Amino acid sequence: MMWARGPGAKKQKTEIVALGGISLEVEPGEIFGLLGPNGAGKSTTVGVLTTRVRPTSGEAWIGEHEVWKDQVAVKRRIGVVQQRPNLDFALTAREILLFHGAYFGLGARECARRAGELLEQFKLTERADHMVRGFSGGMMQRLSIARAMMHDPEVLFLDEPSAGLDPQTRLLLWEIVREYNRAGKTILLTTHNMEEADAMCGRIAIIDHGRIIALGTPKKLKASTPGGFLLRLRFDQSVPELMGRLATIAGVREARPAGDGGVDLYADRGGSLIPEVVNLAQAAGVGIHDVHISEPSLENLFLHHTGRSLRE
Image (cartoon, rainbow, N blue to C red; front, side, top):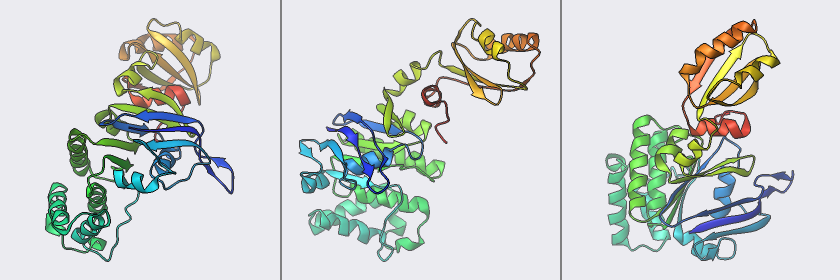
């Protein structure tokens, strides 16, 4: 189990608050996701939990070990994959894994066995004895994750693990992570990819501007969005009275201004609302430029809480 509590971390020189009052607990054997846009505070949270970022206040624990008071014990229990690969280009893939295993005290025979298994699992056996400077970005990412798993950590941190990966490599990564989790390991991953969070995580914390704005299972979070369906309407002019009329349509839970003459409708249904929307717009003398309908999703939840896209 791991948890963090407190005001969080600051960049000392400019006094910009990176985390403000985050409090969360991850259970053993759980795949937990931190979902949010770039700059939300996801990587800072991982940095605090993995001894790379010292918080100005609060507490962080990995199991029974407080992170900043027992760093050696914490580092032995965790594996970390950062956003950008930090591999030694002067080594081969196999050497990187062997050196990592030796650093954590694995014997030579165990290192060799473990490295061979991971190279096979991550489809890197054919390139095992090649210098990594010639690897593609996807291959480097796979090797980075294999390295983090080399000493068989209890907790695996994956910071934006699928960023920049092709779909096939992403699916391979997801399956490997699931298999590792089935062995009883705890996984914490950060992402701004809704599909990844929905497919991988048992629970998700949606984070923005250094604060948690929603926490729960993907299913419950999606169900918590008013109405679930989101209709993004764009008109040729702004008529305040029209938004009030749209809010009265049966099944519409909430109507919000969206800028540039737009209105967001959160509703219990989608396409069947369009004829009524058109009739009200025509009665108000307003033309419709664009209609976009999306089903219940984590993206809609984020839009509801922040008013902006998760990918911004």
